[in-house]
Image (cartoon, rainbow, N blue to C red; front, top):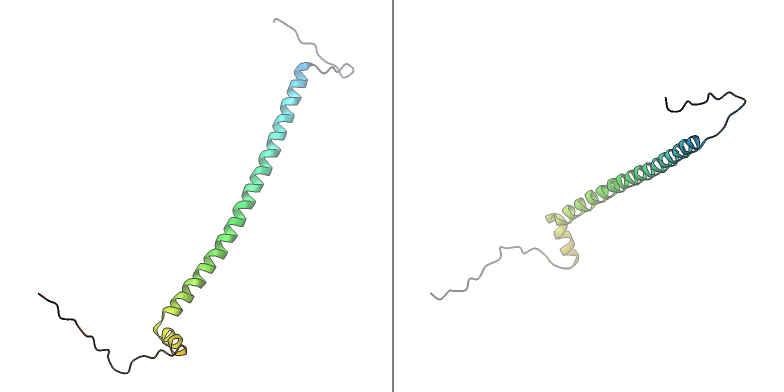
Length: 102
Protein backbone atom coordinates (compact mmCIF):
# COMPACT_ATOMS: atom_id res chain seq x y z
CA UNK A 1 0.00 0.00 0.00
CA UNK A 2 1.35 3.33 -1.05
CA UNK A 3 -0.19 5.40 1.72
CA UNK A 4 -1.73 4.28 4.93
CA UNK A 5 -4.62 6.41 6.00
CA UNK A 6 -4.73 7.51 9.57
CA UNK A 7 -7.55 6.30 11.69
CA UNK A 8 -9.38 9.31 13.00
CA UNK A 9 -10.57 9.20 16.56
CA UNK A 10 -13.31 11.41 17.89
CA UNK A 11 -10.89 13.75 19.59
CA UNK A 12 -8.92 14.61 16.47
CA UNK A 13 -11.32 15.29 13.62
CA UNK A 14 -9.67 17.07 10.71
CA UNK A 15 -11.51 18.23 7.59
CA UNK A 16 -9.33 17.49 4.62
CA UNK A 17 -9.63 18.83 1.07
CA UNK A 18 -11.10 15.49 0.09
CA UNK A 19 -14.02 16.01 2.48
CA UNK A 20 -14.52 19.61 1.35
CA UNK A 21 -14.80 18.53 -2.29
CA UNK A 22 -17.20 15.74 -1.33
CA UNK A 23 -19.41 18.13 0.66
CA UNK A 24 -19.39 20.70 -2.17
CA UNK A 25 -20.39 17.95 -4.59
CA UNK A 26 -23.30 16.94 -2.34
CA UNK A 27 -24.41 20.59 -2.00
CA UNK A 28 -24.30 20.95 -5.78
CA UNK A 29 -26.42 17.83 -6.21
CA UNK A 30 -28.92 19.12 -3.63
CA UNK A 31 -29.21 22.48 -5.44
CA UNK A 32 -29.66 20.73 -8.78
CA UNK A 33 -32.38 18.51 -7.28
CA UNK A 34 -34.23 21.51 -5.80
CA UNK A 35 -34.04 23.38 -9.12
CA UNK A 36 -35.38 20.42 -11.10
CA UNK A 37 -38.24 19.84 -8.64
CA UNK A 38 -39.34 23.49 -8.89
CA UNK A 39 -39.05 23.41 -12.67
CA UNK A 40 -41.13 20.22 -12.84
CA UNK A 41 -43.80 21.74 -10.58
CA UNK A 42 -44.04 24.78 -12.84
CA UNK A 43 -44.37 22.60 -15.92
CA UNK A 44 -47.11 20.50 -14.29
CA UNK A 45 -48.94 23.67 -13.23
CA UNK A 46 -48.76 24.99 -16.81
CA UNK A 47 -50.07 21.70 -18.18
CA UNK A 48 -53.01 21.73 -15.77
CA UNK A 49 -53.95 25.32 -16.64
CA UNK A 50 -53.68 24.50 -20.35
CA UNK A 51 -55.99 21.49 -19.88
CA UNK A 52 -58.51 23.69 -18.07
CA UNK A 53 -58.37 26.27 -20.88
CA UNK A 54 -58.80 23.51 -23.45
CA UNK A 55 -61.94 22.26 -21.71
CA UNK A 56 -63.36 25.80 -21.63
CA UNK A 57 -62.55 26.40 -25.29
CA UNK A 58 -64.08 23.07 -26.28
CA UNK A 59 -67.28 23.96 -24.44
CA UNK A 60 -67.35 27.37 -26.14
CA UNK A 61 -66.79 25.70 -29.52
CA UNK A 62 -69.71 23.33 -28.97
CA UNK A 63 -71.94 26.23 -27.90
CA UNK A 64 -71.05 28.27 -30.98
CA UNK A 65 -71.60 25.29 -33.30
CA UNK A 66 -75.05 24.66 -31.82
CA UNK A 67 -75.97 28.34 -32.25
CA UNK A 68 -74.82 28.25 -35.88
CA UNK A 69 -76.84 25.09 -36.55
CA UNK A 70 -79.87 26.69 -34.89
CA UNK A 71 -79.53 29.84 -37.01
CA UNK A 72 -79.18 27.79 -40.18
CA UNK A 73 -82.46 25.94 -39.68
CA UNK A 74 -85.26 26.79 -42.09
CA UNK A 75 -87.78 27.81 -39.43
CA UNK A 76 -85.36 30.21 -37.80
CA UNK A 77 -84.33 31.64 -41.17
CA UNK A 78 -87.97 32.29 -42.10
CA UNK A 79 -88.56 33.94 -38.74
CA UNK A 80 -85.56 36.25 -39.11
CA UNK A 81 -86.50 37.16 -42.69
CA UNK A 82 -90.13 37.83 -41.67
CA UNK A 83 -88.93 40.39 -39.15
CA UNK A 84 -87.26 42.22 -42.07
CA UNK A 85 -90.32 42.07 -44.25
CA UNK A 86 -89.24 39.26 -46.58
CA UNK A 87 -91.93 36.61 -47.05
CA UNK A 88 -91.92 33.20 -48.63
CA UNK A 89 -93.76 33.23 -51.98
CA UNK A 90 -97.17 31.54 -52.07
CA UNK A 91 -96.57 29.96 -55.44
CA UNK A 92 -93.58 28.35 -57.00
CA UNK A 93 -91.05 30.67 -58.52
CA UNK A 94 -91.13 30.63 -62.29
CA UNK A 95 -87.69 30.26 -63.80
CA UNK A 96 -87.17 32.12 -67.03
CA UNK A 97 -84.58 30.50 -69.23
CA UNK A 98 -82.74 32.49 -71.78
CA UNK A 99 -82.64 30.76 -75.15
CA UNK A 100 -79.17 29.79 -76.13
CA UNK A 101 -77.88 30.45 -79.59
CA UNK A 102 -76.49 27.31 -81.12
